[in-house]
Length: 261
Ligand SMILES: [Mg+2]
Image (cartoon, rainbow, N blue to C red; front, side):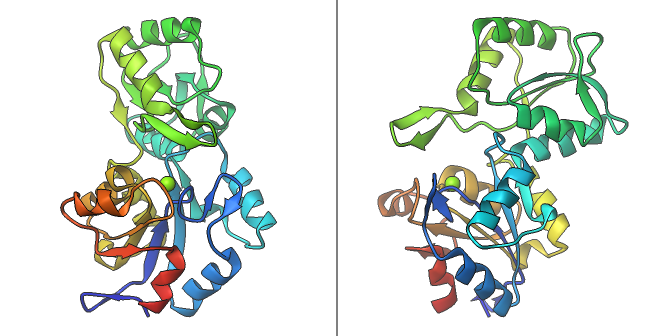
């Protein structure tokens, strides 16, 4: 069992990049990780701010690494924004969408479709095909006074070339151009974690959020009332941890260390 301050952990919400893998390089033996969670009686769900891939693409990636997961076990910022908009527009309908294909297809599952004709909201996220034309048209749609949703605010993300522009860079451009602040769905807002807790049917105090970034995973986990574990296999360093408050419950060199506490 994993026990934190006398509470037995029954569920875990894992970040993927920087926790399970870095690009295509695995950071642990995934098969062993998932069988250990099962042995320890912990239900697992993955939550990522990366909205560029669909659930099916993640299932395929896990499958290639020897682990079978179910669709409910993956939450992306694109799915989170779908849940968030659905709260206001329960019947779906026409919305103005700017983002990658994964955002369009994910929102379709929530019965939203792209239309420039009387959209009820603007929903945007990172796209690597970003142009001035897209910025202009999306900004004009936002200025019509309909709600403006955005997937997640990460300013940049690591790549083999160094830190490259993330969703937050495009968010800043849209907010600057339109003068209107977006409603956010992804980490560090607690919303994505709250959806995860609901899917896991667990109590926040018995749910452990594992992530490599203090400002998104740990902050968001803490805000949703979960226990948190920072792993040092990704973005945040031990020095970042020393300077961070309040501290996560656990500091791990690798996620596998959870099973030898
Ligand atoms: Mg990460």
